[in-house]
Structure formats: C-alpha cells, structure tokens
Image 1 (cartoon, rainbow, N blue to C red):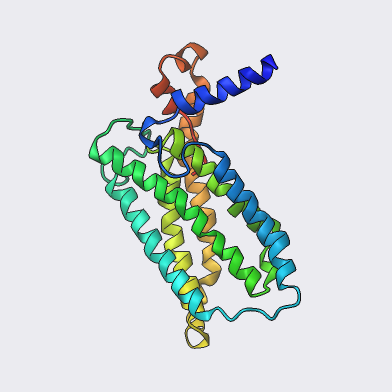
Image 2: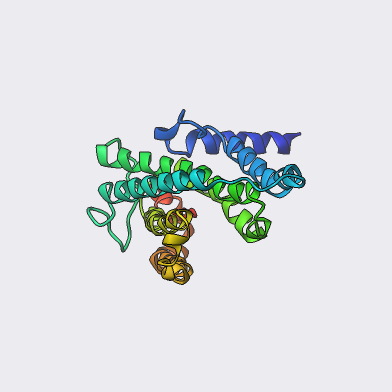
Length: 250
C-alpha cells in the first residue's frame, strides 16, 4: 500500500508540479488517461468492431466525404505549418538548439496553442482508417498503420503537457508540411479517374516521408548527444533547464 501511495503521489507531483502550467485546464490536458482511452477505442473500432459491423454489408460509397475530408486536412495542415513558422521556425528559432520558451509572451503562447492543435490533428487522422473500414479496404488497415495512428496522440500529449515548444517541435513543423502534400494527393485521387492519371508522383510520397524522419533524426541527434554528456548534477540544476533537453516524439 505504501508503494502504491508513492506511485500516486509521484504521478500527481509530475502532473501538477512538473508539467507546463500554461496548459493546465486545457481540453484533454489534465490527465493522459482520456487520450489513452480514445486511442484504445480507435484500435478496437478499426480492428474488431468495424470489420465485424461491415462483415455482411456492402462497402460505403464515400467519394464526396473523402473529397471534403481531404480538403479539410490540407487546409488544417497548411494552417498548422503556417503557425509553426509564425511561432518561431525559420524566423526566431535556432535549428542548432532551441530551448522551450515557458513565458507568457505572445509568441510563446502562440507556439503552445499550435502544439495543442497539432495534438488534436492526430485524432482527426483516425478517419483515415475509419474510412478504410467503411469501404472494406481491410488490407489497408495493417498493424503498422494502426500502431502509428494509435500511438501518435499519446506521444504528442506528453509533448504538449511538458514541452510545448522548442527543439522537438521541428518534427511537428516538418510533419504538417508532409501532410499538406500527402492529403493533396488523396484529395486529387478522390476526384476520380480523370485526375488520377496525373498522379504519377505517388511513388515519391513514401520517399518524402523517409526524408522527413532522416531530417528529424539529424536535427535531434546533437541534442541527444549533448544530454548524455551532461553530468547528473547539471541535469538536476533547474526544472526548466531539464525540460529543454527532453525530446518527446512529435
């Protein structure tokens, strides 16, 4: 019982005292469990419930839905990409090493707001899989696809809760740019055969995603090495300083 009490106390200390106070009270930010519950519900829906419900049904015709959905995702991703630039990247942020700005300055708060909306966008991407299930394209609902979509909201939640800004948001900035291209392709493909013949560049989408992860690796690598070289005493000097060295998966 004493061990359990210590775990509970440690959890509350982490959530209440070591998280970013600026996001306290924001939707879904008080605890990781609602996000975890949504992610598990998503996995259960697309791997168990959805296929079961569609077992004896004809595939849904979702052409118009897909057009509007992909158009929304292009616009949403474009806005997120713009916000990441307006909040620091390519303007005031350093590509070499960028600490998190925990102040209440307009630019810092704008980045925090952008981080939360990026987190929210991971939920809207669930519809990628849901539409596959409704169209009975079960071969597209691979384990890798579901794992990727299922863990992204959870991983981004920790970034927003503890480090909403700084070096690690480079991935979010880059990822939204890739999504602009990706959802533009899906939008054009949904328009029908008259447009699909011009989509010869489909094969480059996977290459673009790989380049994204390579760039993120090389961007984060120097900070990771620097962190490993720090002595334990320096790591505990200051709570905010320690935060700047965290590298959550955005």
